[in-house]
Image (cartoon, rainbow, N blue to C red):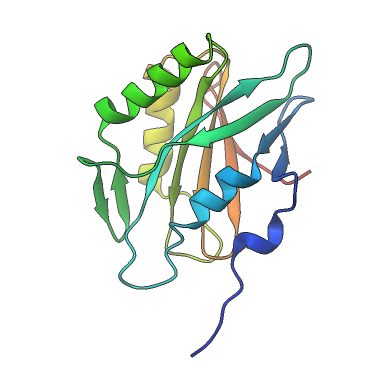
Amino acid sequence: MRTVKYVVKTINMLGMIFQRRSDGKIKINTSVVERMQEFIQNRKYKLEAGGVLLGRYLKDSENIIVDRITVPMVGDKQERNYFKRQEKRHQMVIEKAWDKSGGTCNYLGEWHTHAEWYPVPSQLDKKEWKRKLKEDIFDSDTLYFIIVGIKKIRVWEGNKTTMKIKRINLS
């Protein structure tokens, strides 16, 4: 049996830190990375998984921290190459986190897995991301989209004003 080293090697005690298109950074906490990695599609029977990103905008800076995520829930549609979250249940988690934090825990975007080593967004992914930029309610000009592949985690930043979505890199 062949052993494959997964994304774990790309994180450290600080988590993963990506350079935003602006001057700031977006940090994905280690616990969040580890939770997403539980859903890596490294076996043929593993289905695509996903959820929402929740976190904080750091005061007096351009930095953002992803503190937590939702994971697949009852009602989500999961197939080998498709994930669609059931809006209502995930929205309840978003609202509860917002209320519990006194308005500091925000919806920051979406994440999902791909059954490929180095994930690339599909045309359906891009279409859905643009829909979210246009229709979702959020507190900034940007949303973040994470795809967890077998060997890499990649992040894209979408701007609701320009409707442009660009991949961002580890800093």
